[in-house]
Image 1 (cartoon, rainbow, N blue to C red):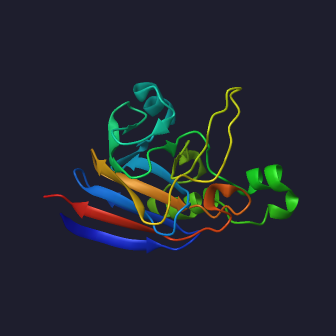
Image 2: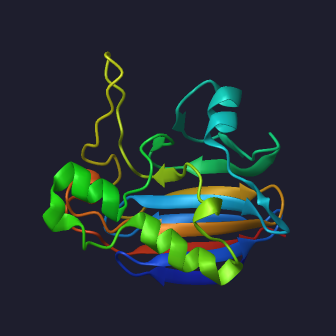
Length: 202
């Protein structure tokens, strides 16, 4: 393995990079219990992007773990989760926003920075805007589905130093929001940094 990129994403910050086909992206939860919101696009045609519905339908499971194939809107693979220390990641909890914060937690939170704002700021670097945002992946986030169908957002399953590794099945633009949420337990009410490592396995 040859490391081609190794960066620490500060707490609450966005990050993006193109991961070439065959390369691997490892996300390290440095301090534990940190949600990492993620969007994926074909690097050469951003109209082809991660599809939660295609991914869930193909694997018949709303959670992601080792072996999960992250599929695009054309039903073809974007990335595969090849290693996973945690065992379960969320596909249905969505991304926090100023609007959802104010609705869920009160109008006094409307000024708080959120994942949608991170995605918009980082996506603009690649020519993306609000119309290009779709349902996202929440790495490390614990969103149980209750018997009555209700969703919870509870303490994460991760701990310091745990990792997940994704293999790019084509050239993929990866957009990340290192979640800034402080109003629910997805980050233990205290967002922390994460590390992004891109490696060439050849």
